[in-house]
Length: 167
Image (cartoon, rainbow, N blue to C red; front, side):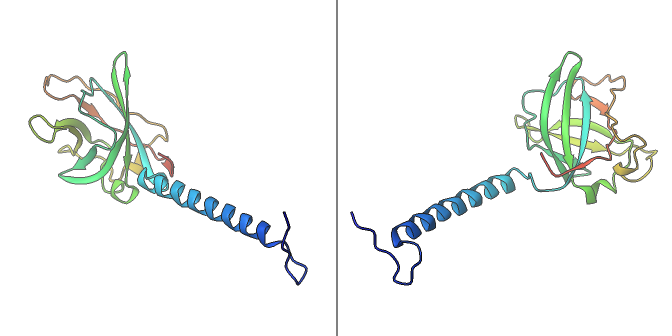
């Protein structure tokens, strides 16, 4: 086995090809990781909101829509069952969160008769201060008001000031 070296005294050609191949594999792996991060919206700045609900149902999935008056303002990142109901973790676009009053009501509504659900943020007649970022506390979570509705659970939504780039 002979090594062919560069006549100018550089590194052998075989070693150079191995390093180039290894660097190509690393570049492909980094591009794949970036693609997955962009798909999961890990690099997108969001305003995180927690909503406590009486129940979430089976069709409220991660990446379900969060709407205000029919306009999509965010998505559901996760749901967690608790002994008192469910906690929904929402990710709202910071630019659109500035327009949402801090005292909106969250309703879980189906898109179709048998389809998945989405979160509808309903603006009350007496809207509070404009902007979820105007919430008084930096770690507020929504509290459940007394609800008599049996078809959807209604909760009072309070927004958090904390912005995050991670999902």
